[in-house]
Every structure is written in structure tokens, then in C-alpha cells.
Length: 150
Image 1 (tube, one colour):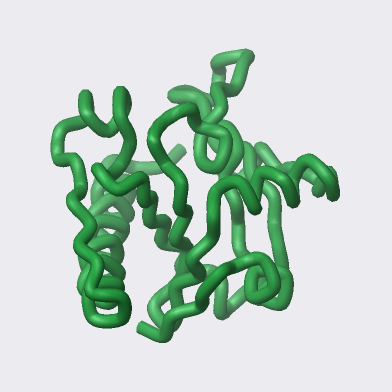
Image 2 (spheres, helix red, strand yellow):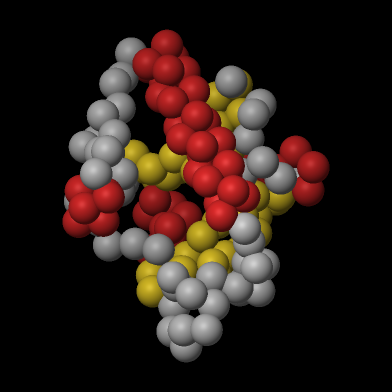
């Protein structure tokens, strides 16, 4: 079971990464991202007004692969998963994911199509509240419309 300090530490790392990526996107594309701050707006609308979701995946360079979320549940003992990540029904059009070195910029529909066509094996035991699949860095490079150095 994860401890609360670990949860809050990971949340802080993710928010810091989100800010870093937003600054880099502004430099690279002269494009501002306006993130919703309230949990209600994030849940009902999406992560940002522009339809961009940013995910931090610290294991990419160590593992040589990227983890793509497709479903979640709030507690491990619940029987059913809810669509999330690339299948969450919100305003997200672009899915930006990366580590401290790079961010890959995907159209959400491209990742959905990859999942539907290739039917990759999903993992839902690490952690038990997230269902995900993996793509290699080479696959991420091929699927992304842009890879940006951070």
C-alpha cells in the first residue's frame, strides 16, 4: 500500500513536470497552456482549456518503454475500472508524456487507434488501481507528432 507522503510526493513531481513542459511548449511553439486548477473542472472538462494532458513517466529512460494509461479505479478492492488516460471522456485532444529528458506529443486519437489495432497486453497490478499498456521508445517516436527535448 502506498503511503500518503509517497502519493503527495508523486503528485508534486507530476505538477512540477507539467509546469516544465508547459514552459518548453511556450518556447518551442509559442503556445500557452491554461491548466484547470480545481478538481471539479479537471474532472468535468479536462486538464486544460486547450485539451492537453501532460503525464510524467520517470521510468522511460530506465525501462526503455512508456506506460500508457487506459483505465483506473479509486481503490484496489473495487471490481470495475473506469476509462481514464487516453480513453477518458473529456476535452483532451493531445496527450503529452515524457520524462526529465523528453516529452512526446501525441494526438490522443493516434494512441487510441494504436490500442484498438494492436491490442497490446494490459497490466493492472502495478499499481492495482491503474490499467495500462507499454510502448517502446521507438514506437513512441513513430506515433508522436513531435518529440521535444526538455
